[in-house]
Amino acid sequence: MNFSYNWDWGVLLCTVEDVDIGCIAPYFYWIVEGFGWTIAVASAAWVIAFTWGSIIGILRTLETPIWLTVPFVKSSSTFKTTVIEATGGVVLINIAWFLHGFATVYVTIFRNIPLLVQMFLWYFVLPEIVSKEAGMWLKRELPLPEYWTAVTCLGLYTASRVGEAVRAGINSITQGQHYAAMAVGLTRVQVYRYVLLPVAYRIIIPPMTSDFLGIFKNSSLALTIGVLELTAMTRQIDEYSYQTFEAFTAATVLYILVTAIVMFAMRIVEGRVAIPGMISLGAK
Amino acid sequence: MEGGFDFAIILESVPYLAEGMVLTFQLALLGISGGIFFGTLLALCRLSPFAPLSFIAGSYVNFFRSMPLILVIFWFYFMVPLIVGRPVGGFWSVTIAFIMFEAAYYCEIMRAGIQSVTVGQVYAGQALGLTYRQNMQYIVLPQAFRNMIPIMLTQAIVLFQDTSLVYVVGLGDFLVHADIVANRDNRLMEMFTTVAVVYFVLCLLGTLYIRRLQRKLAHE
Image (cartoon, rainbow over all chains, first blue to last red; front, side, top):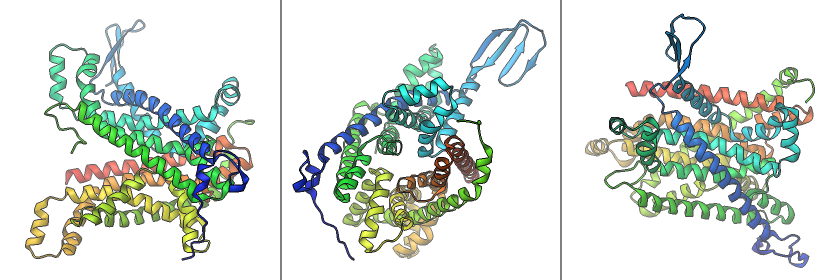
């Protein structure tokens, strides 16, 4: 084994340019800045992933039809399919079927294309296929285009995973609760708002935590479109100072630290919000 | 982009893209088989009654699961040649990175698989006088593998998608080859759309197959 590498942990502490001790750039601030961008990308993307993912997940649990009544003026012919019915002057459209279908297609598409390819689609392909003005706006006028592209891409990608977690959470609640809620006269929205979701969100804290950590780790993919987040910064330090492994170590430690803190915090949250007498999916 | 969607460029570059796809499949297959092999060993260590061994295996898993794959690829890309002492080529460095990284995930899957085998089976094996090794080899692991086939395949699809990350070290996989053509001929839209469609079709076929398999296993 020929491990010829000159360790110099000092480079990580460079705060000013000082050529004498090998600091040709303030590497310390680079790491801080990169870490800041990582957090900024991950948290903004999580907002999208959580809200949009919840909607997708709820739509995927719509099993019973929601009939939308449309006045039907033209002819009096009668036809029936499972999703659209026309009888005696009105058309009934089962919007639940369409919403459910949309959410399923969404999840299928976003889960079966590699995240990196999705990133390129958003960044390189989208400005080409929208109208000329919109394309120009995306390329020229949008402030921090790389940042917002990365946030959108990560958010919409993770939403498909959050959606699956939310669906699993809702489906794991016994049907009896659902029926009981309907029996006391709650509307469908109220059933979700007061009965299903409060329980479902508690149950899915562990998978949601891992989805959040997934976003946090996947934010490193933003470097491919030019966001200078933590991993990109360590690459840059490597290129400037050739102290490859010190920079990588710093990034590794930061990633592990955040992961550990988040997991610890979520375990406490899970314990705090647990419903007495209920065993949640993830709790041991 | 002038001239709308140019299908000719896609047809022209099919051989070059196929070449990249071969590398993608090589990486994925090596990663999956290596990952399952070492993942199973790790799972056995993790469930071992010998505390230091299970602690080390647990730390390994937690360590790799808190790191972004890109950073792991960078680590190994630079570290492997240094440890070996001579250039080994990007392919092997990255393959090792994938195996080490996936082993952590497969460990968790196999651990769940081993725990899904009822204790009675283990006791029965012990009652027959099987050694630990025989018990694992003939009784527990075959059932664990069988129970976990759908989840292992799902993870395999995830890994297949993750191989696209070798882009960051410029290894010539499917995406990188498409990227080279795209930038050479300024056909980003065509090439990246093609890449997305191909990955989508392959992964969807895999997903559908897994769903069928799950239904079949559930019936038995």
